[in-house]
Figure 1 (cartoon, rainbow, N blue to C red):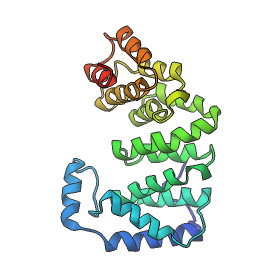
Figure 2: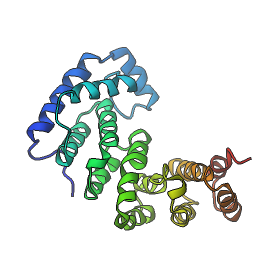
Figure 3: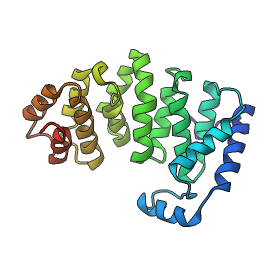
Length: 235
């Protein structure tokens, strides 16, 4: 199991987090924080730092530091997840996306922890498409993990499995994507229904005929939301 916080944060991770703490605090905006929290349905506290500024903070914090290695990335991600304010989790997602080539297949266990801890669509979708997706693309052995997530009962892992091929385009394993969508077609939760439609819509840019055929074949099983999303650009 992945622990919530590294037992001993390495010097590189500690230095990077100190820089992040200093810079995020400096640009915090309490008035904006209230609006951001309301937009996210009061799920998390915010500092009030918009996304472009979070990215600027990360760039400044990384400046003149060695490129973080895989253990440092893991430690920083877990440290960010331990902070209450949502901007820390956003910053971790940006960092992992930019440095995803540094991560090895073993990071999927940490990704699972991040996906299922403080979960909401904002971080889950970023991790699915831009962290888990590249990991699976590089290591086909992780397909069995995606199969398990897709067939499980954890909502956010199911969503991740459905969405992890979102950027694959022609490299999409279409039979697997369609199998996941068919297996969860009757899921009652909005986030799964939306994910099915989104994944099908995106794949429809590569193979519109396959998506039209899938929706037609599963019309009675798919929710109206999934069907509408899947066919949005295929009408």
